Every structure is written in C-alpha cells, then in structure tokens.
Image (cartoon, rainbow, N blue to C red; front, side, top):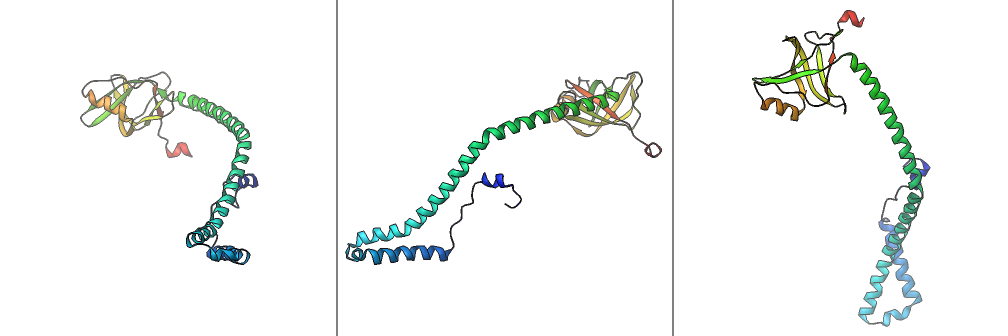
Length: 216
C-alpha cells in the first residue's frame, strides 16, 4: 500500500484479517469473567440456558469483528460512490486524448505507407506455396527480396507477410513466408489453381531492403 496515493488508499477496500490467537483468547476470557462476576446467578440456570450463554459469549467477538469490517467496507463504498462521476469524466477525457493520438498516428502511418503502398492484383496457391501479385505504379518499384506486409487499411491489422520474388505478367510476384490471416489463407487454398481477389481494404506495403552503405 505504500506505493498508492493517499486518495487511492482511502478508496481501497480493507483486507479482512482475523485477530491473532492471543487477542481472541483475551476477548473471550474477558467476556466469560464479566458474565461470571456480574451475573453469578447464571451458574444456577439450566444446562440449555448456560450453553446458549456460552455460545453467545463465543459468537459476540465474531459479530463485533464482522460488524467493524462491514462498517469499513460501507465507508469505502460511499467514498467510491462520491468519486465515481469524477473518475468517469476523467476516463472520458483520457479516451478523447487517446482517440486523438490514434487518429494522428494513423494519419502519419498512412502518409508513410502511401509512399510504398501497392494494390494487390490477385492471390493464388501452387502446391504448398502461396503467392500474391502487386500492380505496378509509376515512380515506385519492388526489388527481389523486399519484404512485403499486407495490412488492412481500415483496421491497421496485419493480414500477411511476403517476400518479393520476381515479376509475372507485368506484375510483381510475392511469396508467403510468414503469417497469413487464416480466413484469407483458407479462401486461397480452397481455389488451388485459380486466382482469387484479396480481402477488402487490403493494401501491400513494401519494406525495401537497406544495404550497409545506405545505413551509414
């Protein structure tokens, strides 16, 4: 609890803990002594009545401890209820900031990816291998060995990882080398020997291989 702020401690439910054996025996012994010295006539009661009194003496400390704990829980619940609407507003503000940051980051990524983004012409499977072909576009090219990542332009999720492996019918051919969306892969494998369209909103982003000279 030391790392929590004071307000967080005030709004944290208490940990329930029974007193140790010494305190328990002391409380019960005190109650028994009080009942004997202040009410000596209890010794003349019938056995059933004395057993009831003994059970009450043993249960009274338990009820007292549970009552104190329940009271502390109720106090913390009331504190949390008072802080609820303030925290709800704070969460709303954080959500707005997070959404704004997400939109800004997404716009930057779209601008960066747009420079190396290619449209997917088709997908097909041959034996145990899976390929996609990319449409050419002016001012950009795909070299053999370049990494190609297919992403969902709307969701931003990765749909497949490929590597460029040459040209085919005026288009760039890329072979699957890593992850591929299972649903998409199922459609492609189902049409072995035939081409199939890519998923909606799918865009291929080319990550050119950098040489040591370029890094320097």
